[in-house]
Length: 499
Image (tube, rainbow, N blue to C red):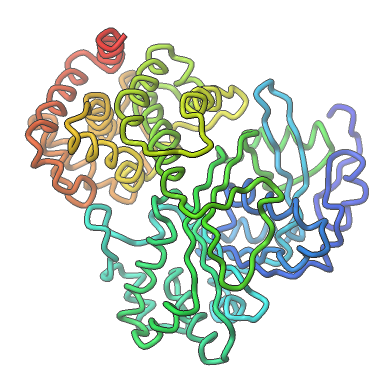
C-alpha cells in the first residue's frame, strides 16, 4: 500500500470519496435514461463505446443516451455480477506510452441485464420505446456465418434451439427477431442496430445474418425490418488487453479503489461510423468519433493493417516463445518483417483514405504494438484465429493474387499458423490454443507435416485458395523452410531479400 491507506469498494456510495483520487462521472446517473442497449459488455466495449458515451453525459441534451449492458451468454455471468456489485461503475486504466496510468471511473452503463436469467425481459428492453439503438460486441464468431461462403450457418444447434424456442432465445438473432417483432406488433418506431465488431462491412453483415435467420423464424417480419431498421457500418479501434490480477492490485495500491474488474487500454482510440440512425443518436462526434458516408476504406485499412499486424506478431511470436505483443514487436527481425508485409502486400490493396496519412498510421501501429505497459497477451491475439485470419489476412492475399501482386509474407504467416496449430512452439513448450475449430486445425496440421497443402483444404477458412497454383507453391516453400530451419532464420532471409 502506498499513499492511500483507506480502501473503497467501487460503487455509487463510494463515488464522493473516490472523486478525490481519480476522475469520476460529474453527471447525476439517476437522471440518465438507457437509450442504448449494448450486447456484450466486455473489455473492448467498456474501453470504447461506453467511454465515448460517458464523455457526452455531462451535456443535458444527451441524458437519454445512457447504456443498458446485456450479458448474453452464461459465460458472461461474472461480468454481470461485477457490474451489479459496482452499480455499473468500473475504472478505465489508460496505460500511456511512457508508463504512466490515467485512471477514470466510467458511469455510462446505467442498467445491466443477464440474459440467461430472464430472456424475455431482454427482448422487452430491446423493444421498448426508450431504446433507440442496439449496439453489439459479440466477437467475430458471434455472427454465425461460414467464413468462406459468407452464408448464415442455419444448422448451428443454438440457432436451431432459437427457432424452436423463440420466447427463450440464446443467440443474438433470436433476441433481435423477437424484439423487432414486438416493436412491430406494438406499433413502436424502428431502431438502429450497430455492430462494433472487427468485421468488414459489419453493418451489412449484421443485416444479412439477421434477415437470413428471419427467413426461417419470421419471414413476414422482413419487409418491416427493411423499412424501419438501419444497420450502419462502423470501424472501431482501441487495443484492450485482458485485465490481469496485477492491474487490480496496482489500482488498489495506487488509488485505494477496489474494483473487481477494471478495464485496461492504450491511449489511442478511433471510431468511424456511417451516419444512418433511424431513431436519433448521441453526439458521439463531440467525444472524437468521426461520422462519414462510407466507412469501407477506413475499415479495410484497420482490419488489414492493425488487426492483421496483431495476427502476424501473434502467430510468429508464439512460435518464437514470446508471451506478449510488445515483446514480439521489439524483436527487430519480427518488426522488420511486419513493416515489409504492411508496405509491400497490404498498402497496394488500400484505396483512397481521405484525411489519413498512411505512412504515419503504419508508424503509429508499430509504436502502439510496442507499448511495453499494455502487455497484450499473444495467446489472446491468437485465440479464434480461424475467425480472424479470413477477415484480416486473406482479403489481402485474394486481392494481391488478383492483381498479380506479392503474397510471400502472407503465405509465410499462414504456413507458420499451420505449424502453430500443432500446439508447440520452437522451444518445445505447449501452446494453449483457443479456437472453435481447434480439432480440425490440429487434424489438418498433422497432415500438413507430410503434405503442406492439406492445411489449405479447410474450405470454411480458405475457400478456393488451394486452387491457386502460384499461392500453393509459395505456401509449400514457406512451410518447408519453417519446418526445416525454424521461424527466426526464415524471417531473417525474407528481411534480407526485401531490405
